[in-house]
Each structure stands twice: as C-alpha cells, then as structure tokens.
Length: 399
Image (tube, rainbow, N blue to C red; front, side, top):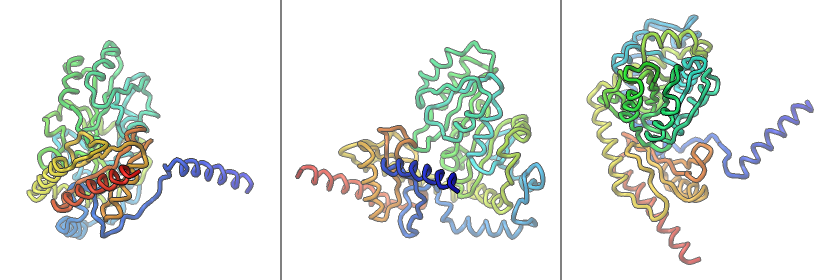
C-alpha cells in the first residue's frame, strides 16, 4: 500500500508539473449545438442522414453477428472482410489491401516490421507519432529526419547514403495533420528515381490519412490524383476522418500484405474490428463513389478558399495551407489559448495546439473546415477572429 501511495504521489507530481506549464491534457465533451471547426470529419459524413440510412440497411442485409469474436488470424476473419479489402484496393488503384483497427496500429505495424536489419529510414520531421512508434522498435540501423517538405534537405541526406546496399525508406504524409500543407510528392518521387530508376532499394511510404476522401477523383487521395500509384511502396488510408468510420488500410503489393499478416503485431495480437465497423467502412466507400460526395468535396474546397481569402491577421500569421486544415499562429501559448477560448465562448469548436504536439514557438489555433459547414458559418468565424484582434489591439493601446 505504501508503494502504491508513493506511486500515486509521483504521478500526481508529474501531472502538477504539466498543469503548471498549462500543458495538462483533458478529455472534453464538445457542446452538441456548437459549430464544428475542429474535428477531422472533413466531408461531414458523420452528420449525413443518407449515410446513416445506408449503414442501417447494410447492417440489416448482413447475415453475420455484430462482433468479430477474435483476432483475424484466429476467429475474426471473414469473406466480408476479404471482399471489402479487394474493393478498397481496386478503388485506390493498388494491388492489395490489408485492414487494421486504427491508423496508429497500421503505421506502427508497418514501420516496426518491414525495415530489415540494418536498413535506413528517412522521415519528414513532421510525420505522425504512430510512425515514430513503429520506427522506435524497428530493426532499422539509422533513423534520419529531413526538414519538413524540404526536397533539397532530403536530397542532401540521400546523397550521403546513396551507395548503401541496404533498403532505404522515405516516410511522408500527403496532408500534414497540424500544418495542413501538402507534400511535394512529385518532386520527392523524382529525387528517389534519380538515385534508383527502377526502385531498386529506395522505397516511398505515404500516409494519406488527411487526404482520404478530400483529394483525388472521388476522394482516392493525392497519390492517385498525381498518378503515382506505381511509384509508392506502401500507402496508408484511414477511415476515421473524412469517412466517419474507424480503422485504416495499408495498400501495397500482395507480398507486403502477406508479410504484415505474418509479422505485424498490432494485427496479429488484436481482436479484429467488428462486422458493424466493416459495414460502416463499406457504406463510406459507397458514399465516396457517389456524385453526392463529389459535390461535398467541391463545397469543402470552396469554403477553404473563402476562409483564406477573407481572413486578415494583424499579428501572427496563417499557415500556408490550401487544405481544409488551417492554422492561426500567434506569439506564444497564452494568445493561442485566449483566441481559442474566445471562439469557444461564441459557439465555435476550435482547439489550441501547443508544444509538444507542435514545435515550441509554433503554437496555433487549428481550424478544420467541413462539408457540413456553411458559407455564413465560415464568414461568422472569420469575423469573430477579426473582432478578437480588434478588441485586444484596443486594450493594448490603452495600456
């Protein structure tokens, strides 16, 4: 009991230190009647009555139990899952697909197992924590970061290792979750092919989590939009953002699929997702293939342009993003939290993003636009941000 009390004291002391520097994380329930400018529900499918009804219809038509009942390698597999994977692979122009319970599981499983002993991973400095988790326990001999979306820095790092006989993996995202900018994917592919024209031992891994549903024909992603399907070793698409579902898929060769089935621990030792979850993914892909979703995508990109064209920041800056993810960067943590709190009080759901989630000094209010947002809601948000700056500038001038 004394040891337990001591442990509790140690944990509380650690939490107190985080609280003192205003970095204590909390679980918050958003007010249901507030306007969402925070979530990753980019197409607004979570609110779609059409998708809800089609999902219920899909559940009714399934001659299966709701749960999976076990690991996919034991009792959790099904023909329904295989058929869904084949459909997803075909939709995205890939040879093969393998579903994971989450994007975190997929990235962790991929990066922890595929690099062989002595291999090298070059990764964009802003790749997701799940990639870092996989790399941390991988057999790679070197983990080399390169400056965010900096093709010149990537080239310099590749130049230093170009003569290695080991496999070299380059890890990037297409749309970065905190900055919202789009990777120079064509240029990165060109650099890799300049060293390995036939992809001999230079392999590109692309995380499309925040591009799925938003970019490419019917939301197939940026790799598809640029026609680079055959240039990418592995792609990750998540279902939990624009597709209003949960889980993720790794796209690649059939050899990669079989390898992950045999070695990816998050897949092997986790109960597979339920039939009800698979049915929701199936329904989401029905939506992607419909013309209605195309209209939502057009509306979403129109809202993004309107937001960027109408906002004016007297201090700080707007991150250079043309995606639905927008970042208002101010000076230090306090102004960021103050702006977020001000907008929350007006009924807008936005969140301050502080270090260590983003580098110190780059704290921002993260704003996400959605297919269910209206033009008037975006205009109201922009006007409220302008009002915040006008009020604060007025107060500062009186001091």
